[in-house]
Length: 425
Image (cartoon, rainbow, N blue to C red; front, side):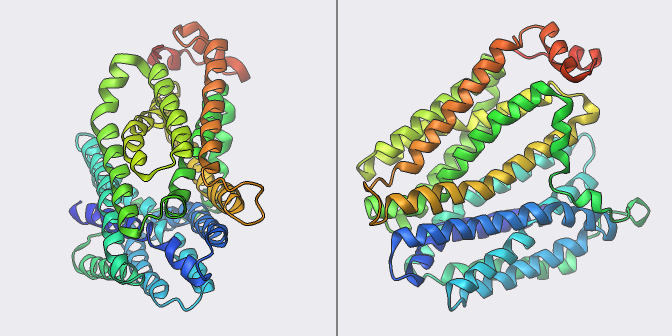
């Protein structure tokens, strides 16, 4: 379990290290043109996300067939090698290749989660998955800060450090990582299991959940937009260097850990899922509007602190979904939401970075407006709020009768679900 925690931490740390560096490296290849850098950066991020989306089900299915150990070790070795390719990349084309391979190898997170499920008991499962959340949080706190500091020495150095971490982890795992999936529990490879869109069909069985999924999609799209455009926006608008970008991204990660690790539980307990979702989406909408309007760099950290309340919205939506869905469908429905998140990771950089940011910082734009992506994000959060308000008004979730009607919307009658689901206003 310790090795898996370290593996996930190093994976996320490696991603975090590169976040403040990659846009600068692309800009260097393009002679310092920010608008062009935005266009290429958005496509590169979309390529990475697309490979993760397509390969995660396949990697998971292969680990069910051949075991977790060989897949995890192969992914670590491939990731380390890929970071070296990016470190030595002589052109932007090599960066594209590097991020494509990184997307394939980054799909090992699916296998790491399966490994945790194999070795956990019902008593330790929640704690072990809590370690997963901690690994992600720590990686996104320390990764950008370290990347910014290393990038100040050399733009290539963060890639070498990430490669070293991955390869040392691979070597350590080669000697100490046991197999968690016994041969008698392995399954054959099914192409059906590898379909990344297959889980989305499960939403048809729950009209109420499908409505929540649409709102989740808009909010997730906006949130991804912030991640994708941050470095280019702050560099263009405020003249921030990599160190400043790394530290502010570390602050974003720290606030996310504090809110999701310590505040979301008491907030939901006091306000209920519906009001928590409304709080989070409203905070998101206002924070994005403030980011778009902020004319000075000193305004950004207070917005980060306030905007951290946004971190309660998406988990609360998923919690609301979990309380609505029958236990036999939980995995399928949560898988559908994971697919939605992956889809937004593909589309968002193309819209926010390659599209809006690139256009509104170019010479052909009628007005220079680097905050345009944040204005779109604020609008998407508003749309999400409006959809949920309409859904909650049409289906008053304070009554079990309303939930029964929602579940029967397409011929489903499941009183067992209603008896379990208590959805507070």
